[in-house]
Image (cartoon, rainbow, N blue to C red):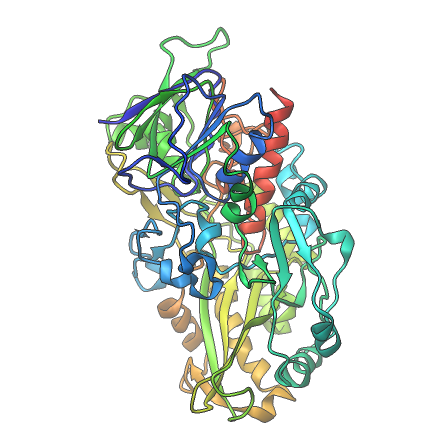
Length: 590
């Protein structure tokens, strides 16, 4: 039987890194301090939720509790060491969600990795720290999220950042530079340019090849212009070479703050509502049910902070959502919001690899994605392919809103990046050297999907249907991105050290071959958003610009589900943007 946290003036954000739960505990040695009421209870201690909890608890007169369904993970080497992050996939630190079979990628179900541990995705991701183009953030305001634009979000994210300029050795060897105005230097999240082996490969082969293809090096892509090849920015502490994330950056420095209580292995499941509506017809949250082992408590405000896959589940279990979805499982409709669980965005990813001549890098050495090249369609499509792209862009995908479709077409015309090419070079113990484009990502797909409940049991995972590559343009542009790696390796000076293709192999030659390759070899990049979109209610929105769920008086959402159209980036910087911006909004309304 679930426990209940009672509350007043509830703020409901979503589930950040929650999952099935067994035991409730503090994440440090002090006993769990139970209070009669909390000012804020945040259900989900992921990148956004945990960071937001720390920010709200800066006011010593406000008490904040976090219910995190996963374990603490503190000290786990698979978390602290960025290179071991994949060891968390498919374990207790991962929700282990799986999609329904995806018709446009060979009817294959897709694993959907989501952090189920304190810190959420920031604890198990690859650490990539990127910001998108100014137009992508301004688009949020154009879609109806007043006050959510490049200026406000750029200011917010710099509060979270502690940037470490590159060491002089790398500046001299690779020409690394940064722009101080693009960065924060006093925030909790450490950001540094990837420390690379100063091999001859990058300055002698990679960079000249990219320049010969017309790609201009972007020395610092964090100021609102992301186009082109740049060096790899990571959330990492350069002195210890360990992960910087919501736990180490935001939480651990204030772990003994007496007005902040973090309880792991405790999963929020359902909102409890007052019997009567407000005079203006809104419903008011008075509590939240949660699953734990040994305790319960009361609260004034509850914030559920989570993910685009879990937020709709909590709202739907609470009677907020599409009437057809709720009726299918026998839940009474309290707020008719068809946008809940709709507009699911995610990015498809695949890889390509090429054998290089022995000796390109030292045996046993790997250079992990030191170059990230993000390109608009004009950066990798031929003139003929650009014409075909324009033809395919005339057809709007079924689940994409008219407003989003128009904006995405405008961004394509403006040259906003659409495809990521990440370079990885490694030599094994026998000196066999491979160049792998380990992240070929269609970063701004037009395809949209859904995530909904099909059971009233809160521990049953939602039904996830991203509809990967269902938009014909997506499949065309993605396949052409893989095909473009052949152009890269056949361009001097890189061509002089390339032996031949490994994956896809040399038999893959035609356009149809490359389409078949992405059909069978693409998977999820696990960057989810959009399912509680911050757009007008009449256009399928779920929350207003103050993060309040339509039809409620005191329920908010603050996670990536509010972002109607994701920037073409790795999303951890966006999670911190949302946390900092949400804190500003909530504090202003206290």
